[in-house]
Length: 205
Image (cartoon, rainbow, N blue to C red; front, side, top):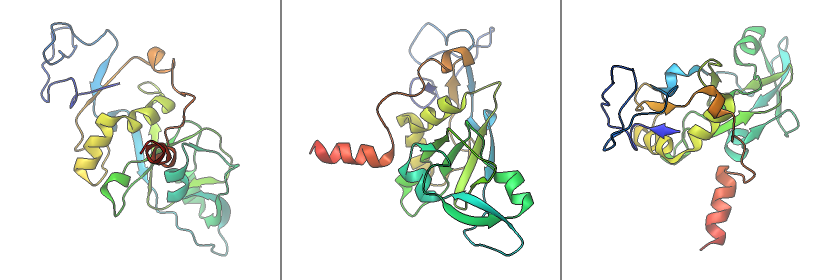
């Protein structure tokens, strides 16, 4: 994954072949790579499903802020909160495999945009409040690749500077490889979640 704020010019020039020149290099992006803001690669919905249990609504498992913040992967087996939601809310915010859920806002600027990947789901698994649901466009980006992109330093730095996460609207474009290359090395053995990275930093000091 390449970010225009890293190796590409902020206003990259496009060649006649439609490729984008790298800053300071004579070669171009590989064939099949595309430069686009994240909003062009995902469908985004900001959840409004609260933690309440309301008579007449449908029981659900709620994926909350702390579930995303503390886990890389979301699955029904986690100790998820029980709540209720309307049929319309379930239709809009039910989680599917390869969805990416991110922390939408926080009092701390470096806690914005923390991602988790949905690896298993169920009929009643729903994205909760204070989270944004990113559903990858399957013709553009793989869900696991999107997840790792959001963990990459160039993207994190942009979100840190923006302070408020709005997909693609104020973030520089990202260079995305073709889907066939995205699926090769998506789930490294080491965990990169915020909790494990903090523990690793503490043990190294």
